[in-house]
Image (cartoon, rainbow, N blue to C red):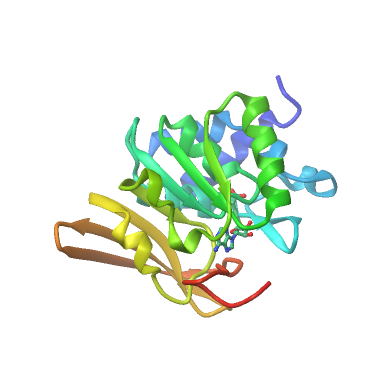
Length: 213
Ligand code: SAM
């Protein structure tokens, strides 16, 4: 038994209560130890349903948000998925645990290096790079799924272009206070969009995002 096993079981029960039904998502979140992605002073809060600071004014997203976005992305084993906003690396590891081939981009190099160390230590093969993810990662495109874990003022066009036919883009879009989660499915030349209200993310900063440092 690990130190936080009971807390993780309670977190999964809460996610189910809040409407997460995808067993693959629940299993991955049961297996991956969120407290390894949380920094020192906040470790005891690792399994509360809340976002937590990870440095550089950034956060590891709330467990419900990770579960909901992953459920909406609905990746299959072997799906090629691009994540924008590596942060702590938790979301990337959840996707890798579900059998996805994961590519992730982070603009804060310190966070990226920390996440990379964790990927290696835990034995996950995840491709990562530093830089502005709003322009995507053309080298490995197209992607079956793209997940953006920071709030965009609008949908960055390059990400739509790098989506495979039948692929899904999950992205929070709105102002700096609240956003709606857009789930966009590319079907040939058309885009089907579903929107879910009421999320709160840190800003997506970059060429096709907000201005900022
Ligand atoms: N997915 C992360 C996790 O599991 O911990 C949560 C990340 S946090 C909510 C959002 C991250 O997006 C921050 O680390 C931030 O630095 C990063 N970010 C913001 N704009 C970015 C951009 N244009 N390209 C890459 N990363 C960006």
